[in-house]
Image (cartoon, rainbow, N blue to C red; front, top):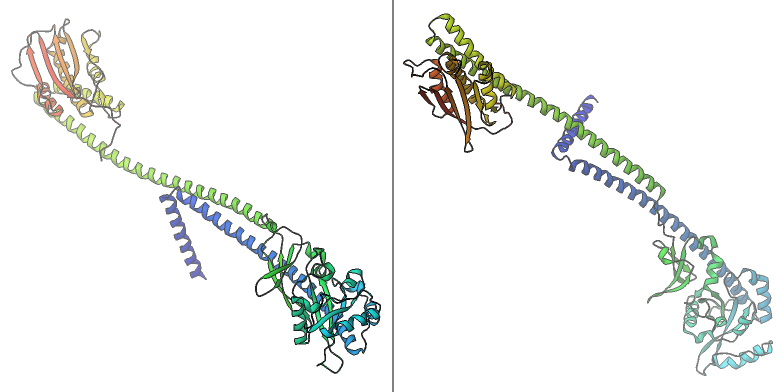
Length: 556
């Protein structure tokens, strides 16, 4: 049990991990795919419910069709019982007079129990040569207008003439004398009954009673009658004319017919012949249910059309509504999981970025500290060489470190990005112009790199220190002009000009300041430096590379 639980847990973790990867790799496709998959499952469920409802409706329709078929079968059995009872009577009787037959029919209460049958009749089999004798005998029994029709030919052979038909209604009386052997379908059914010595039914025909009335289809049922104890001698047929519509309506409960549309076909080798159709629109009916019927010895097809259901099952609507709600909730859950995973991934990425930035800051700090210490070390070494005593060494070193610190402060304010040249010049020179009129600063706002700013700041400090000690600022009338212009798109030309100070002469010995300006500045800037010791005032010119503003980037 514990092993199974561990396996299930690992499988769940792998599945969750795979799903999280899908959310990460396919942030748009995965939620849509999950939602569509949920809708697919909902559609399959709704379709299953609909199919279950359809099967239930088909089963109910099958039951209704079976009930209709059973009712028709029972009605057939009842009609067959009338025919067999009449056949038994005529078989055992010696005389078949109309009075005797009508008395028997009255006792059967045919008017109350025919159920679709037009009546019960007797068709006497005679030879065509005996037609005249039969006519005389029927007239003698009171049938004064009796005649055989159609008119038999001398060589017609056997005639099957209707001599009795109860109840004696005017349409039934009009059928007396009709030779049923003269019509093909009737003759075929009679021959089949005679051959099988059993009940036989004809194909659909028009009854003599309905001639010219455009009435419903009908059929006739025949049963042969032989004298008692002599099966070889043939007397005639007991028969029953049946209107198919009345027969079906009498057999089937109207409630069953109202549930759908019923069609009945007579099965023939060539084609199925429609013999009954109840009310109903085929366009509003569902797929039919077929039932095979054996009516006497005829094969019928019962086709029942249940009403079509246009609206979905209530359970289907419930499944759809609940399923869509579930799919939307699932989509919301997936989006929340995706957002949570995104937030977690953002935290991880932010942490990794912070770690990377921290390492880069450490590297940058180490680099700048090393550069600063290197600059300070060089300043100390060079200041020591030119200092005559300890006090002057300390003073010079302190001033130079301050100049370096001023440049560092300016760079820190700009986050060690490109630095404004004018702000750098003002930071280095403003402390030496108490009145604000002795140092003239003129030039556009341009940017230079941080390394260039440190070098230029030290050079300006050396130039102004030299001007205070030996140059223009050593007298009250001296002036300094610092001007720069942009040449082209990549270079700044800076001019340092002193005037009004003591006469200038070239130094015999090169000190720290001059070495810094001529060597260090030229090396750092990558541009030549010119210093002119004009007696009217020192003039220095150097070039700086122009920098475009860019975001600050740490060293990799």
